Length: 447
Image 1 (spheres, rainbow, N blue to C red):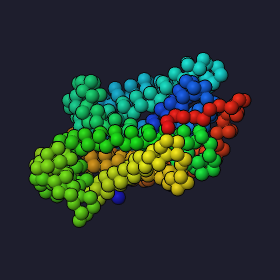
Image 2: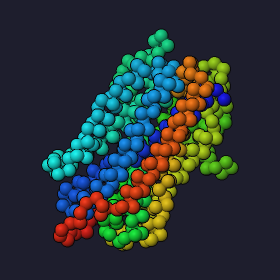
Image 3: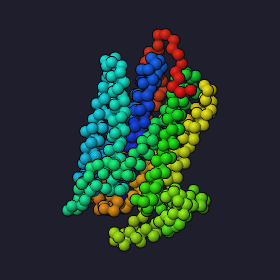
Image 4: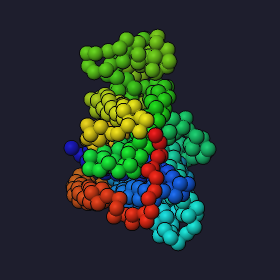
């Protein structure tokens, strides 16, 4: 094992951990804004209690995401200086826009929301949480645009061994980004919906309060709709992968040789004829390139080397993403049907919603592994190999020390996060706002 291997492990470990908070922040912010909007429109104090309850969970998650995200920036200079040198001129613009526009907007208005209760007019205060939530989604857009450039570089030229941006608009409207952004954001709403469903399921097992039914029904609807968007955008992403990243597609399917009318491999030994070609090019007879044939072509184009990613990781992460994501969405559709027309939540459904909490998180992590490991051995497809991206002056011992420190730090943060969230969930909504003085109608976000 050398410094490159440990540097890759370090970036993978810290990024996977950071990515646990990102989708929940993106989706939960919009959900909290929706709850406050319901309170603003109806005056029902139970919506206010739910707003403050889920708002605090959102704040805990947001703070942890900021802390863990800082480490990502450190690593660019610590372990990946050659990569930073190559991409700096391109990444500078979208990352600066993310920090100065999106994150500044998100953090500023979130501060106003936190301290603006009973100080700002209700409409202005409502606007602050919407601005913060929109800022989170804008932040995701700029970061994903930079990430998409690594998969499909556009709007640049290489000068003196460095990528120089020639067209910012091309970078921000990269076809890969336009497919990736809605797919990731919709997946984030599935994660947030699954989180709200788990919390609601926990409380539905303890109380019959109408507010938890209302929150759960809203989350069921959000999760089901977001799942449909994930499926549609995933289909578009697969077509782009067929055109732009054929090695990733072939690895995800375990396809070794160019095949016309390629079958989709459900698991090794079980295939659906022609489905891979149909999904890749909307043509059942289309030819899909295989890993071994692509390897020979890439060697002829780029020189000797192994251009195949870790095919076991890519193959199985693709299936974990699909199965766990579909299970979450399927459970939400089933929940909507079982609780239609004001029918009560069955106890078994509440338990299932609680137990399903890890499923969407595992699905998005598997999707990230598919996306990033599938791009290997490139950091920038066709331009910069991962082996050429590592900092030349960093030793194996130095990377090992930083990896150990970050692992221990992230372990402590994980315990802190779980304890804070669990403690707040167990307290329930009564700790967040006093009970209304007069009787209010039952909440009805969606019946």
